[in-house]
Image (tube, rainbow, N blue to C red):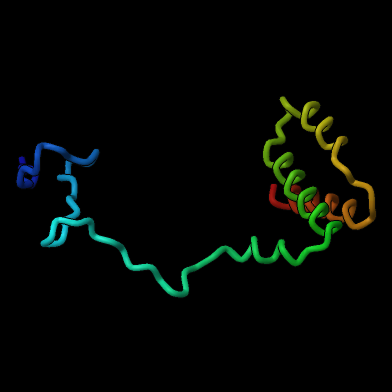
Length: 111
């Protein structure tokens, strides 16, 4: 029977996998080590795109998000509850109705 590898004792603390926890060293002066910040850090593009939307487009995007959420939770047991939530959504123009219908057909095609 093979013995597990032996790790040096580091205060007796180990991770859930049995490995010793890593210790972040301080510099020679005893102060905290600071991380470097990237000049061109990644930022989500979604937030930038939403700034350029008109009020109607933003409402349509919000409706699509809510309807996708309902579709993802849909089961035979909670159909009536989610159907009543769907009926409360503001589907009040052709663009929103088309978007909702497209989502239904997209979801059905995945099944």
